[in-house]
Length: 462
Image (tube, rainbow, N blue to C red; front, top):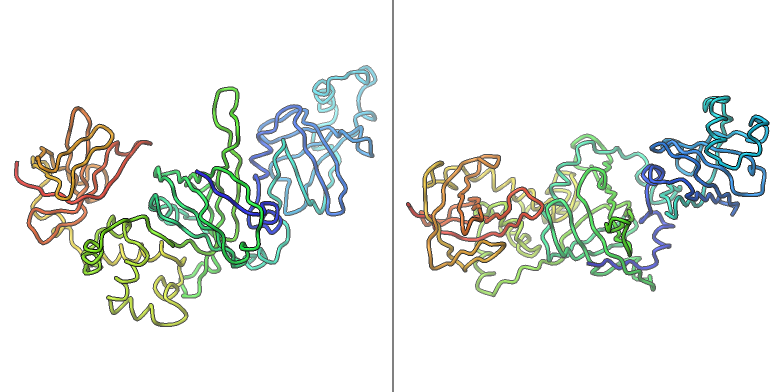
């Protein structure tokens, strides 16, 4: 699982990819760790950690310059853009005579704090930071940049859950393109989707990225939560000109492990993402299956089936619908018109199709013959299934029990048991046939090992 990014330092310098966040790195510093500060003129200062109280960090200067006898204090709120504020005290001038021969910095610090509480230390600021290294990690510095200027008036979206849900719906095997504000793109092949974590490998760079000549090979993971994903919008109103910008923090897997054998990770931040688009689908269907799918109308598709669609299939369905076709052919562009100024791309299109599907479908159509609490038998229509201890032969029927809404929502679920392993069929849609359904088989529901697969089943009375 690898992502290859060309000219890593070039991307970092342009602010499109940045390193670890200051607040997180500061909390991780240990006694003896180094902090290196370099300003925009090349001036450099080096410090060692004396004590760290959850991001309240005390340092000593390691240089032979003006600060050689000083202790420093910094906290998680002290870095602003390219300026780092701090508090400092001269040890030689303020330490009692009986401790001036003491070599243990922690002992001297404890005594100084008794005599001079931290609020009495002199305040100052390191300005125009060009580079900040803490504990060996390059820290994300928000340097002024033409690309950042584009988003200076944007507002942060507080409810990021809708976008997180879209990320969770990405399908393994598909290739997704991150479009950056400078016109460059990073295409990623999704190797695995574990629900809350995505594993990628590189699939190419385009636009300005074509000129990059040197690639760095890393393993990349995205944990989907509000800590790693943020969204900014140009307006908090619902007018059609609203635009979005995203920042996503990936985890790069480092070589080696800690003393307990755990893998080490390093955060890598990709900034100024203006769109995420599906560029290639892994779905492999023969010509007959493709023709059948293209004959379907949008209202005949379940949410799971919409997730299964390739970008070409979605385009075909949109063009076959008069309402969406009008939006597609009108300016200022299909996506802006279709989503009413909301975030653009194939993810938005899938959400629109699902909403349309919900509007034109009824629960009774989906669950016409299945009653909660009753026993039924199911039979796979397309092919047999064998995964994680659940083996279902398409030539046989298996007993299940219908439970409506047990796992949340208003859906109907069919619970079954094979060799002591429970499986669930979530009913998505009823076909023309009375007892033929499109459903999702789920194994290990709501666990880290959860597995889902869309299938067609026949449901008959027990």
